[in-house]
Length: 297
Image (cartoon, rainbow, N blue to C red; front, top):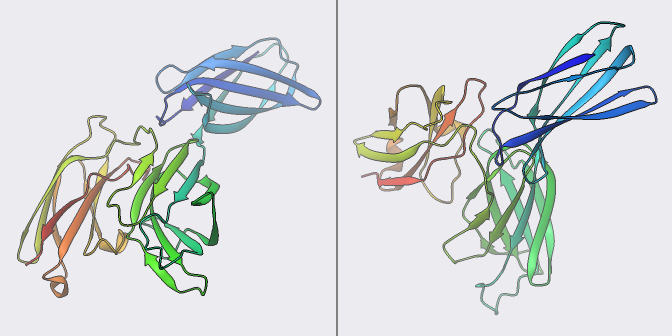
């Protein structure tokens, strides 16, 4: 017999409901299902042939998507019970980005689009999609293999000669474990619609507020109710055409829910934007809080 326990199944955008085990050894293969209770699943598989088995475990949410996955090996001995612990990690997500050129004057026909995706820890674009051509009125990119976290998107619309017609601000979106994120973008409309349907890991801080005195900015927030935050990180930027990076951030250990950050004196006269993220003990960041801003006189 084989006793299998899922030791850690973090929360996903849709909570895992079922763990599906696929066991294989040589030409033998069988499937076993276990219900998820809280953050674990337990079960016993009886009457297995003695030998070395490969165990593939997948946590599935209520929509049937695999959101966490892991693998382990176990040797079943005759007349014995072999305990096995399998740790499941977040499955990479998928994206679909739809860019509409509606709003660009007809006197400047858009020939192609360049799309650049960044994340805060990277010094250059995480992924670039260049010379995307229009299909049915939209410039569309679909891709997979995105680790669950927050990203920034920048769009450049180009004429046939390669000259830039429109360059967007940085726009944020989030990718959740094993899920598809759809981003609809259009220029000059003042908003972005992101369809994600997610549960944060951990939840984002709320009620962020900021005040600036001299070159010091005081930032405060409300801690997430899920109690998963081991620390927080405050990010700031001096323009919407800039992006959030770790070079302009400050980490604060929980349970503190406030920070004082030093601003560059060279940026006086600008509007400074702030977001706060929660970090769990393993370093996973929540999605960002709502952005707040203050005038830097």
